[in-house]
Length: 165
Image (spheres, rainbow, N blue to C red):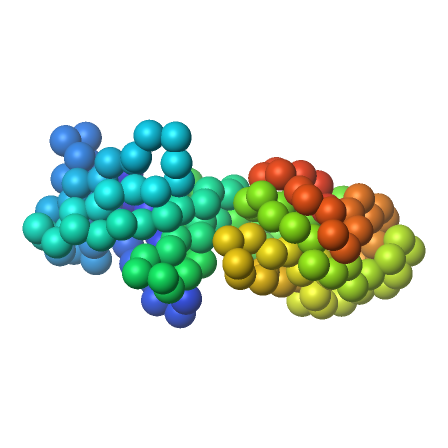
């Protein structure tokens, strides 16, 4: 399976074959990854070097903490990427845009209210997770239809925070 992975501004193509062999941008990498029981911690050995990685998983978005540094990682498989490209080529999105929490956290700030007009890219919610604040932006212009969270609320992964019509 091929995955298109973005870490910061770096994009990587990662292939994992049926035998578990991992290739990153055409280079075979020797990787062994084991999840520690009852935790979000993973033991990862890459080319013989051990790393402890704490990961929080969301809908295609991961927060990975390695050596005290936190990275936001976007992972898409080829099929998802092609479908997203097809959707973009059809023009502006219509219908309801739903903004969900990709990971559990605490709402730091809600910057919009019901009925408010927003532009694509406007910051609408700030969520803190793993001691990192994440800004969620309007995926398109529209009107805020519902706001389901308030500052201080704890949210679970996948919780709907707000909708835009």
